[in-house]
Length: 133
Image (cartoon, rainbow, N blue to C red; front, side, top):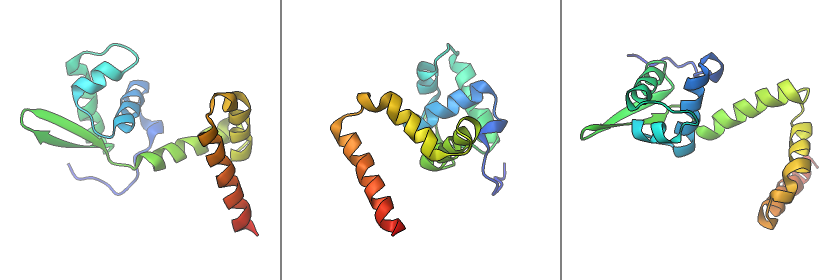
């Protein structure tokens, strides 16, 4: 099947297809067994294979065969997909403001972050300030 140059859109996927894509993006490369074991709700091995095949047909995954096993990888870069989903979440829940989304997250989850993570956030803020001058 010929692939189109249009970026695949997660919004056009069913809930279960999105769950499969989350597993794929988490691991980077998966087999049907991995999807079967990592999904939050039970799925049969043949069901996992079917969803992977559908997602390949829709242009979300590439497939490669190794021996008797098939492995699937995401077409789109995981970071880009994540950023796209974050932008949509900021738009839906924080009036389009990444600052409000991040601020709310840090206020609620900051105590769970270790010193290295907090230092990294501080460095990103400092770098952004320096670039803005």
